[in-house]
Length: 171
Image 1: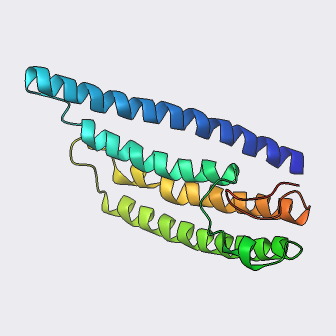
Image 2: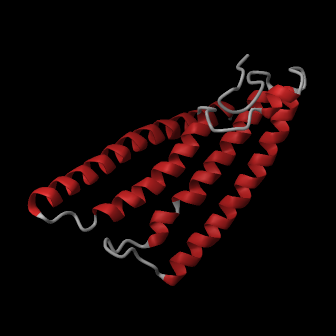
Image 3: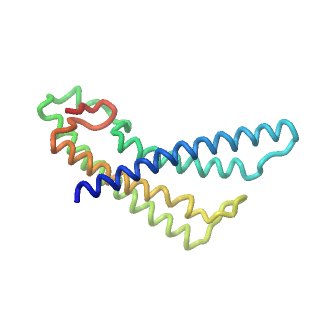
């Protein structure tokens, strides 16, 4: 079962990487050509800024999930300085559980917010896209982040990682 879940996580990780590269490239191209056309012809893509903004939201949340998988999310390095190395894994596990709970709660609130937006029927101004489609990445990515903190907790329990975040020590 664990191998199956790991395989799903790895495929999703590849999807994230592909999406991030594609979305950032697309944002740069849209903004560049919008600027170029505006400067050369006095017109531009009316929809360019809106689409770029939506892509930025998706890049931000998928990027956060990607960073969590890579164990490179931002954390305060205080535990490494305050606690002895032998209890650092327990502190990291405790922090991991707290972050998991907060992330799940935020995901729940995100799903509630998306549902309300869907019920109202809000759409974007220029592209006329239902806004819930843009917003759905928020709770979905938070669920993936929470699941990745579960995976990280397992690695801590197995002794493969001693702390969380960029400064983590892999054993």
